[in-house]
Image 1 (cartoon, rainbow, N blue to C red):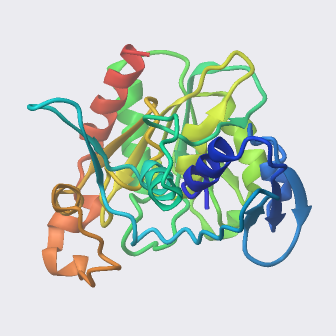
Image 2: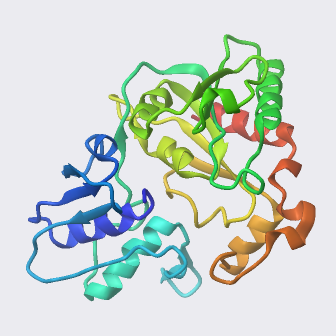
Length: 290
C-alpha cells in the first residue's frame, strides 16, 4: 500500500488541481501523510480517488511494472528499479505525458518526538515468520555488536505487530508490541537507526520525517524478494540481502509472478543465515555517514 503511493503521486503531478481522498482502514496514518489527502474510514481496500478531467482507474499490482531504463547518453543508462518509481513511470506511460520526478516519488509521513541518535528500533513484524524473519535472536546479536563496537548510551527497541504475550523480549531490548501504524511513526521519529524485516513498517520508517525534515537511517533485511524493488527508493533507505534476493534483483525476477520457490535455494535464501555482525557493521557505516 505504501509503495503504491508512487502511482498516487504520479496522478497528482499530472492533475494538480484534483482534491484526493483516501478511503480505507488507515485514516489516522494517512492524515499524517504529506500528500493533501482528505481521509475517510472504510473497512475495505485502501483507495485514493480524485475528480479530474478524465476517468482513470489504476490498480497497483506489484508483479506488473518492469524495471524502467532512461538513456542518459551513449554510454549511460539510469535504472529505475524501486517499485514506487516503477508505478510512477507506468502511470506516465499510461497517460502519455512526461511527469516531473526523476526518482523517489513517495510522500513522507509526519513523526513527532525528539531524535535520540543512540536509539535503535528493530522491526520484527513480518508477513511470513518462517521465511522473512531475521528473528529476535538475530536482532539481539546486532544490538550486542553495536554496543561492543561503539560504547555509548544505546537504547534498543523491538517493534512487533504481534501482542506482547506471543513475542520473546530479547535481553537488553525493550519490547513494543501491537502499535497502530500511525503510532509507529512517533517511535521511528525518535530513532537514529531502524533495522527491520522487509515489511511495511520498515518502509514506513524510511518515510518518517521529523519536524526538522530529517529521517532515520533505515536498513531493510531481504531474504526472498529483490532488495532493489521492494524499497522506498529514498536515500536513507538501505538494504542487506541474501544471495537469493540479490539474484532476483539482477534478473528482475519475482518469486510470486515467476513462481519461484525460494526454499529450493536453501541457505542462499534464508535470512537467518545473514551474519548479525554484517548487519551491524553496515549500520555503523550508515550512522557514520549520516
